[in-house]
Structures are given as structure tokens and as C-alpha cells.
Length: 262
Image 1 (cartoon, rainbow, N blue to C red):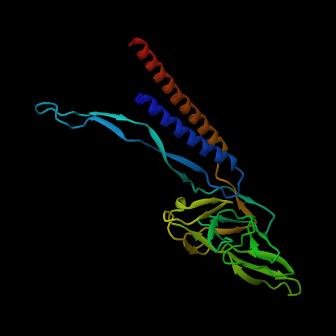
Image 2 (cartoon, rainbow, N blue to C red):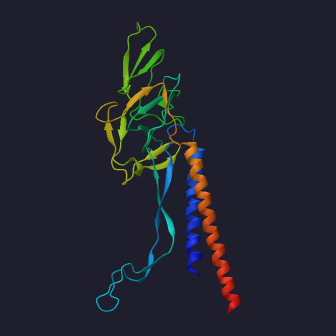
Image 3 (spheres, rainbow, N blue to C red):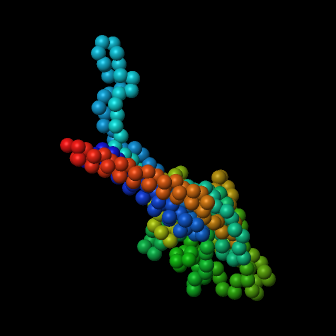
């Protein structure tokens, strides 16, 4: 195979993967707490035909040598954990973390997941749960006949009940969890992520203290995806794809000319 054909093929594959990443970002532009993903590229192995610094007779040395690249690949994807805009709502169970941190969610299989999506509700048992019915960890149960729910910036949840002279009663605390490397978390869908060896162990904290983000009640964190930035990135990716396609067609034309000449 002509080397340029292989190199162009790797470029097409890489641009196709990047386009998939961009499309997923745009699809989640309105997903609460979503963090944009970006593709990371690296060049492939090089065919070294003349080693830089090799002797070239006498005391002469090759200053650069001859190295031919073999293309590109996507080495990985990385989430950008920049904070999205905060949107004030009228729902007392809507929460956002203003700064670093995640909410901890108890999964049905007994495992623990983490999220920046603070859209919470009450289930039939009065537990605070996410949209899929998975409860906060530790579990917080809102008692019957509750008139109001107040969530402090430190995550402390207090309620007032009918017949209790409106005396606030503390029923639990929303814990904030952080990671040394949040980009190492594994996304499992449903706005949830799980711990991996790359993320490190979870660090428990209190909202607004020791570098942990404060819990904001009746507020949601919007996606950090910029539609304009993604569209510009999409255009540059399209152009790069077209250029790699041109490499393939030009290499094919060179081979055709060579075959006709022999």
C-alpha cells in the first residue's frame, strides 16, 4: 500500500471520531450538569530511515535525519470540568454545586455513582432521589406534613412541619465529594460517573469548606458546552476530513499514473 494512502486513512478515522465527540457535545447542550468531551490526538510510529546525528563520513553528522510519519490516532477523550452557568429555579429540591465536587448517588446494585446534575425529587417514601429514582447517599428522608425544605450552602437540610410551630428540624446533610482527577471518572450514562483507578479515591467534604463547592438550593448547573465553539470545531473537523480525502484521491491518481507508465 502506498504510505500516503495509509496515512490519509488514519486521518479520516481520527476526524470521524472527533466528529462523534462533537455531535455528542451538541446533543447534550441542554443536559443539566453535562461536561463537554474533547478528543486528544497523537502521532503514530515513525519509520526512521536515517537516524538524526548519525555519522555521514568523516566527522560529519546528519543534523536531522530522515523520519517518515505513519499517521494519527485518537489517544483518548477528556472531559472538561469547567463550571457551567447557574440557573435559578423555583424548585426547592434543585441543587447545584458552585465550585468543585459531585453529589453521591446510591445505585440499585449497591454501588455508588457521582453526578453534577442536581435535579432531585421525592419518591413515594419521601426520599430525595434523582430523575431515575436513585437516592442520594447518605439517604435523606423528608417527613410527612412538611411545609418547607431549606438546604444550606453547607448541604444541611432542614424542614418545617405543620403543627410543629414552624420550628426547623434538621433531617440530614447533602455531602459533596471530589476527586484528585475528575477527568478520570467513567461515564455510565444517566448523568452518572463512577470511580476508576485514574480518578483516585473520593474525597468527602462539606459544601463551601476546604475547597469544596457550596451547595446552592433552587439552582441548576447548565451544560458547559458552547454551541458556537462546537460548531466552529465541527467546521474545522470537516475541512480536515476533506483534506485527508484529498490525500487519498491524490495518492490514487499517482498510483494510476504509475501503473499506466509501466
